[in-house]
Length: 325
Image (tube, rainbow, N blue to C red; front, side):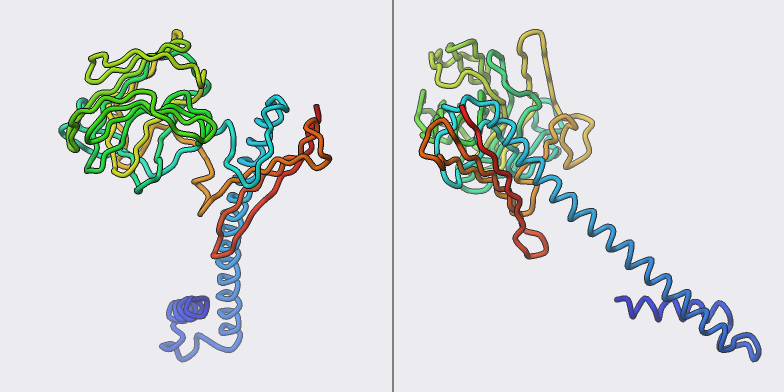
């Protein structure tokens, strides 16, 4: 590529100075000057490319370090009794967006035409977090439409991490609330009914302490008492099929938030919803190991690893520390 650039610039210089058309105008000195100028241009061009690449590489490393540091700070603030031993486990008390999301037009939407579409991969929990953390009591609602079957789409709340959350969702044959606590999933409530892809439904949750109420299309379907998880993040979520969401509403305390995605460019998301996470790194993975190197539950060794792939090469950073009672 650089050789092609050399000949291109050299020929341009020669043409401009009538190298092949003037009997007098171009001698050895001018030729050497042309070579020097073109070589200098190539050097500058190559240097700029190197700087751009270095900035990209540095950005990935910096991002990975920040993610590891964020997890470390969370662990430093947890009671040491919560730091149970584990090896290459998922991060704790932190959750990231997963899957692609962006606005798309849908004239059938409740606030036509803009909606937020969340992509989906089979058996993968895809989610888009709302810009609010550690919320206990709230009212959370959204209209949603699954694109195809199989359907599993809805609203997550009191989400601590990938192993601790509530998920209120619809499927083709039922509406249900499940919870995942300590990595174990169980069904809190389910009601069997026929629900269709391509149809807009409205889900709503109100939560106050252990009291949780579930609504479908503004009709209350169940009151539940469950105190397994007291607070956490809220998110739009799906598994198995892309889903479009509209008219997102969240209120807690004196705060009221509403999003209908109007005015956003196609493929965009609200600015306040953007977060950098593990899934923004190429093939990013975050893992946590907690051990007791001195056979004492009062002394914990924490190792946090964030890894990614860059130009076909595996990269990683590791942060380690000791915590004592």
